[in-house]
Amino acid sequence: MRIVIVSNRLPVSITKDKKNNNKFQKSAGGLVTSIGAYTEKMTELSYAWVGWPGINTTTKSEQEEITSSLETIHCYPVFLTEKEMDKFYLGFCNRTIWPLFHYFPTIASFEKEHYDIYKSVNLKFAKALNNIIDPKEDIVWVHDYHLMLLPDLIRQNFSDVPIGFFLHIPFPAYEVFQLLPSKWRIEILEGLLGADLIGFHTHEYTDNFLRATLRFLGLENHFGVINNKGRLTKVGTHPISIDYLKFNKTANSISVALKAGEIKNQFNNKKILFSVDRLDYTKGIINRLLGFEYFLDQYPDWRERITLIIVVVPSRTGVYHYQQMKKQIDETIGRINGKLSTVEWNPIVYKFGSLDFEDLAAFYSASDIMLVTPLRDGMNLVAKEYVASRVNKDGMLILSEMAGSAKELLEALIINPNSIEEIGEAIKTALDMPKDKEAQIIESMQNRISNHNVFRWVSDYLNELNKITLSQKQLESQ
Ligand code: G6P
Image (cartoon, rainbow, N blue to C red; front, side, top):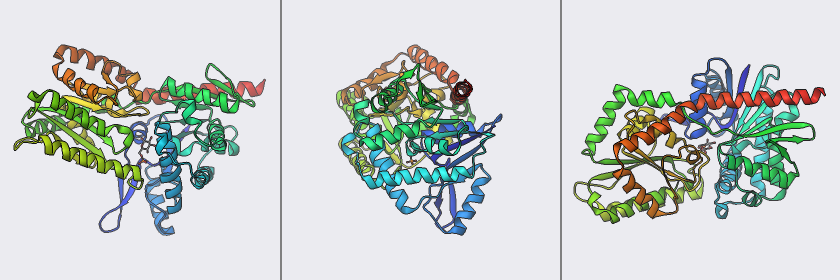
């Protein structure tokens, strides 16, 4: 058996270095982190990963060169033109679906041309897959909101191949999904129903989807199974996870311990609050900064004794709301630091860029408190990574109730990210927490994540996919 993973973005993105040579860089985001952790260690199954290589269409010879170098790492590129990048990726994916599914309907745009190109790019992926899928050997696993029409397009060409779909972002409540024009929302639901198994992170997203299929397509479900004209689709909750041991072991390594020590020294053993996200208006970065400011205003004794280290990874820089968010973050940090800094202390230390894996692990290790405050987030793996990295079972996680991971990490200090006061008070609670209580909380969350790690997520998902394809065969043989 081989798994054909399909996602908009490949696990590596190609960029140009100063001499205009192609440079391979690990892609950012939860999808690549989790599936990539699995493919790195894949032993029983082989795999192919199909997706966009992160670079606009180049010359034919350059495309061939990229294709052959990617093949050595099981990757098959689907090249997008500049127009497709603009209307599909920056347009329908990131100006319509992303804001809408994250409950930002007022900034969602609804442009017919964007949707038309979304359809044609999904078709382009389906055509590329015609040359890759071997229906006798393969399982196809499509990922995320960029490719919601693809399962049905694949099904039209391969009637028997097992197809899974997983949505890495929230599936919104019926009333929000309803904001999509009726033709689009029906086509999206029908597109998804080409899959044998559709997975979501939480029961809420699963329920929202089942309600949408009932209300817009008139399809009932029986224990999560929808029978659409003789074709079965199981809809289920499969919360994604991380490679727990990788984070735990790295945090325990000598090199990371040394780096973490250096970070602590650099900040004169002050308490360290840490946060790291892709730059996104869904991540609640401004409220986090204001929450920290509130804390320093309310508890001035803590000034000069605590630092917030905030890492923001550049993302979707071609979308206006992302550019605006960057500006707002820069200004807010400038204002707070301007107001509170002393000769020896800056309350906020800010890096706009990415961290390599060891550095990330060192920051997780060095931090006393992790702040994860999204306004809405499908899962949020950073929260799980921090917990896995706490080898001494100390530290504390402040986690937004709007993140999918809050459904699992119930022991964390759960806050509403719209309340600056709740964020600020949670920082105080975390600082005052007795060590034995910290240990109890971290240990309990670690047990859960180490059991439900990314490998368990994949195997549970594939078992479920296998079960539903067997039920389909039984139904057809009746
Ligand atoms: C989220 C999405 C992924 C996406 C990632 C990075 O995690 O669920 O599908 O790849 O963000 O975003 P980008 O637009 O750079 O691919």
